[in-house]
Length: 203
Image (cartoon, rainbow, N blue to C red):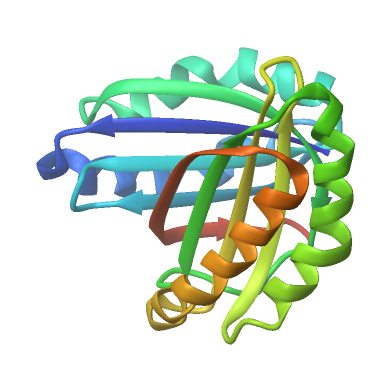
């Protein structure tokens, strides 16, 4: 499975219009593309940040959809987006689709990892970290994403609502500390978002 993420920042005063347009149009646009498996739209309205993630069967499906939808995506984010960054990830570990929806909470951690530590990180996440995350109240789903050429990874965790997201900060910090130490990776960023939309075709 492959994931394309889009990270946009801009004027917080303009974010609601961009979110409304994207929430309405993105699922219809994506549904016409071969290999499409799911989509998430996340926002930090206070700071003016939008994150989108779309899931694809193969790297070829991801690439073809990006070629087809790039201009339409830009139009949806305009005039909010002052900066837009697109990344493509491999998804070696992820849990089944969640039934969570708008109002859920999303935490995203990005890390650096050396090539020789990638498999150790994947194994640690699958065998230890994910088990501990599942024990957190309000846990809905989690995924580990890798950008092997860039030596980067991202961990996304969904919680049922904002209260569960806030309550999980301390416990997940402990899980994160143990996982980072075991895999020999370094933390790059830690962010939280509200869930605006989750689209799960066929579920």
